[in-house]
Amino acid sequence: MTQTSITRSWVASANGHSDFPLQNLPLGVFSIEGGAPRSGVAIGDHIFDLEAALDAGLFDGTARAAVEATRGGQLNAFFELGREARVALRERLLELFAEGSTLHGKIEAQGAKLLPLAANCEMHLPAKINDYTDFYVGIEHAQNVGKLFRPDNPLLPNYKYVPIGYHGRASTIRPSGTDVRRPKGQTLPAGQTEPTFGPCARLDYELELGIWIGQGNEMGDSIAIGDAADHIAGFCLLNDWSARDIQAWEYQPLGPFLSKSFITSISPWVVTAEALEPFRRAQPARPEGDPQPLSYLFDQRDQAAGAFDIELEVLLLTETMREKNLPAHRLTLSNTQHMYWTVAQMVAHHSVNGCQLQAGDLFGSGTLSGPQSGQFGSLLEITEGGKKPIELASGEVRKFLEDGDEIILRARCSREGFASIGFGECRGKVLPAR
Ligand code: MN
Image (spheres, rainbow, N blue to C red):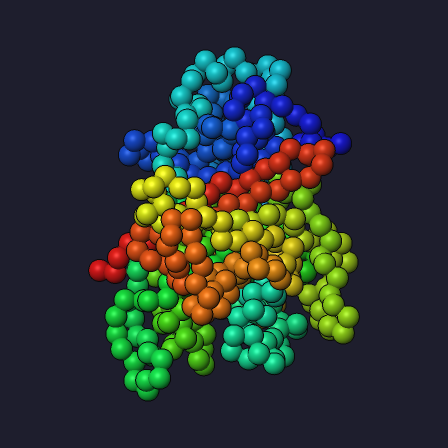
């Protein structure tokens, strides 16, 4: 049994909390009542104010240096410190919040100064994101989408050799809760030869895992596959909102552009590799006949434990459903085990040409669909490009997202003998085009 598999907390709401029990301890940046953004750790229904705790003398040694690096409302410097600092902080937090902690009284005495209720806080982006890259490692999604365009040949020949990706837009990444303004752009109406300009009519979501880069590399150097996991600071949920009609017209020959760059939503808590340790899995075996990864992408240890078992869920809540008090409709239930490439392979590939990665860079995994209906991570797949609308309990139908629709991503890790942890939500509501 590891330390994280059994411990209860004196923070009552942490025990059995669906997202943030003592075993999770994700980091984030929050503010209260318009105050300056500051770093914190989610525990139960509360946020542990790291900066206030630092001032209260609750950290020393490596853990203290780690918390010092979280000052200023951005976690980049903390990410840069790497695994050792992260582990030292985690161990100190486990000590502070475990049932029977000698510091229980001291922390509780300061009340909301150290442990405000999360409901009273606003969450911000956890780091300054210099660069954002979106991959395409969800092989079921790649096949589903490929089939819509090339029924006989859904995967292009490079897919099983190259972790496919493109450079996304960092400036429009926003935390959960930020509204999504319907984008405008050029689209080519069916049967026409010339485009029209107007609001996107095929607005979609993409269910993805977000990957936060920790220590980077110098330009010209690359990160070896065997070291790549140590360059990851943590994980979040990511919704790569997509304007399918704009995308269909613009994407050839260079890939997505304005169809993706209007907003990308992320869950604000950074779930660490340490919290996910019990939920690591072997990378699923490649189907018979698939090529082995080239050697710069192959590492025995990464193949043995470089995948994760994270259940992913997407919910839809329309304006009408909210008015009628209907529960959100589940669109997707999927899992991170549908990734053809591991997160370490993404890091190794991204840097193999000498491209510099920096602390606080963000990767998206690509849409993580499963093979069955009910597991598709986008409406493009669920409705087969709008051909098969879905019916909702409200009596409404949807081919793509309408104004007022809200998409909610959630994630959960469970394993016998271990506390379940979650990621918190990544939500966004569609507003009409302006
Ligand atoms: Mn995407």
